[in-house]
Amino acid sequence: MAGTPRSHCPINLSLEVFGDRWTLLVLRDIIFAGKRRYRELLSSDEGISTNILADRLKVLTECGLLTRSDDPGHKQKVVYSLTEPAIALVPLLVQIGAWGSRYLPASEELSLYAHVLDNGGPAMRETFMDELRATHLGPSARRHPTPPGPSFEQAVAEARAALAASAVS
Image (cartoon, rainbow, N blue to C red; front, side, top):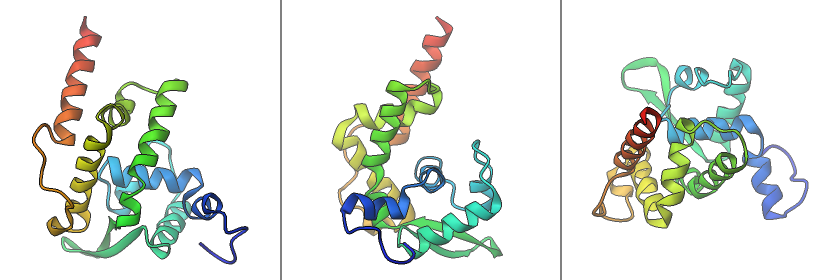
């Protein structure tokens, strides 16, 4: 957040951090698509420009939603990781996705994550958030033991198979 906030309303303050479409799409790609490198993020369907992507990554890092670390596989590249405050945005992003798939002409394939997380309720969202914690913050950051039942990826695979089966019939 640069400069003085317009107000100290919590909604305003939040929107000043992540309230533009590009910032939310960068977070979406890191959270749901597992993209963690600049080039991966640049390849999104929406066609973000290089200067906007660089700016949003800088803002998200400065605001404490992302961290940067050297890419162990390439000395000139960095890997972006989510922080706990970014992972805490998952329920909000799920609700935005669920709203979009309910009221807008969204693709069924691109709506799968929102459907799985929305229909799976708090338990599925917490499982997914714990999987993100393990990936981005390390295995010890998990808050809960791995619950019985399908992982988030298994639930998405099952939903994708059901979608494909319904397309055939």
